[in-house]
Image (cartoon, rainbow, N blue to C red; front, side, top):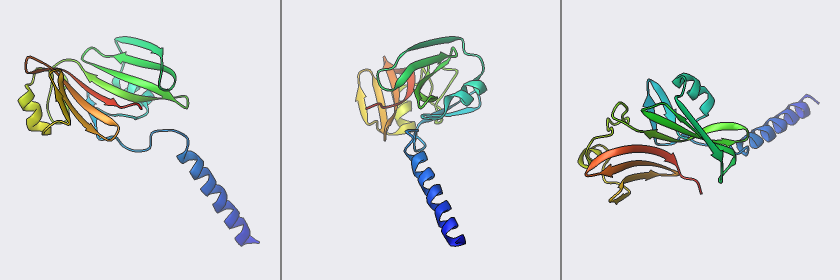
Length: 161
């Protein structure tokens, strides 16, 4: 009788674990992310805790999403922005935008650096156009927008199918 209870408990645990895995939340750590003001921000990370750590935002915008439920939201902090999406009632980080030279990537690239410096730090891009360099890995990209050979914006973003 005790073995049956243990087996039943194991089956219930296995079923719960399977349901959690199917809940639609992001499944894996993303290869691209930023450290801003000492806060490590990963794409697909839960946003509420990160937003608290980053402090008060200076601007905010939201619009109905076309890819998920609810709203796409953009929290502005002057030198950077955090873009979120909602899934299952929880906000997740979809994009990080570095807007000036006070912030840099984990490899030390910031707005104002040259295309050559980006390539030296990151290698050959997945795609290069007159507008910039794109490094893609899985469902994430790191974009360096460029004008006159210099970085004007840096964007980490999740690609939405």
